[in-house]
Length: 243
Image (cartoon, rainbow, N blue to C red; front, side):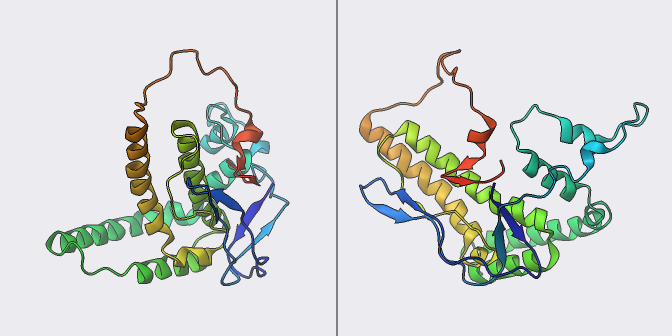
């Protein structure tokens, strides 16, 4: 299983990478890009799933909520991803620092919204924004947090591909590739392209549905009986990643 190791003092990533994805017009387009700077190294050996969390003693009079979340199987979430999420959620910085930082962050969002109410298109500095995000990810976030952030883009891209594969076979909206493997990839307006992909996907897919005269609706109860294995949920476009 492939794991993104994101954080300080990592070795340079291997050159190249990725694959190809259909563009809906009979051509092929690359979905991987060479890393522009040494930020993330891929390794094939994942860390222990729960980091010893499963071995914690259970006191019925004072149950550990993190242990309950780790052992819960109601959602098809891979153990590696769940463990990374729990480790991040129970960190001391989140417990003590986040309550102090959150009001300031929300106040800055309100200020930005007020400015853009008056001037919707200015100031507009996406490259500066993404460079500051990449700086913060490299300097202030844990490897677990960075791994989950990059994983989010892979999952989003695969969900859109799954929808177009089933709704409009043979046609896939032309979207910006979303397969980041390094923190440096964030500098290329990654968050902005992620949002643009969703809007462009909805517009292009629905135009194609209208052209074909297709109306999407709910399937009949019991018509989807094929079980989905956890290994299938962990496979993203031929690249093994935790779900």
